[in-house]
Image (tube, rainbow, N blue to C red; front, top):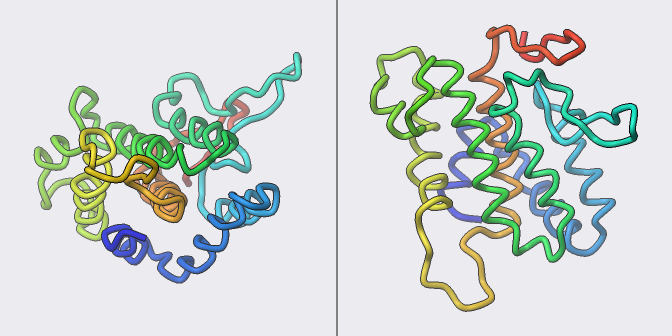
Length: 201
């Protein structure tokens, strides 16, 4: 796992999950059902919408998001991660899993700050460390933006043909980290599901 992602696990308060994340990553490539079940166990520990509850079947038997339509930008990345987990070989989807996980945080930050037309990095520069975010969230978001999200969006590393910028361990860790940061950003903003359930009290 990349050292910056190990540091983000610590800052998100889930460093103790590192071993379980590595186990889940191994299982997803050999016994997907078991690995996904174990991922859901961790996902359920985080408030809000994750792979365990973001979708429901509509009257036609199709999966649809449980969130309100105006909140689609916030949660769409979480749904994309769910789709990417099912595409094999999963190792080829790690880059997209990381980018879409970070997109959830970016749109959560936009909702929190009311700044819609700027990137996450630019928003963080604008609000600064003395802005509306506590420092124990502001600094981890800066690290996530500079060392993970920007790389996922803009950098092509000089790697061997069949290797990847982010390992599956990295991708699963970033997904869970972003779920936690997203939940912290959205807490108390009154976001509800279509059925009226408050997601981040």
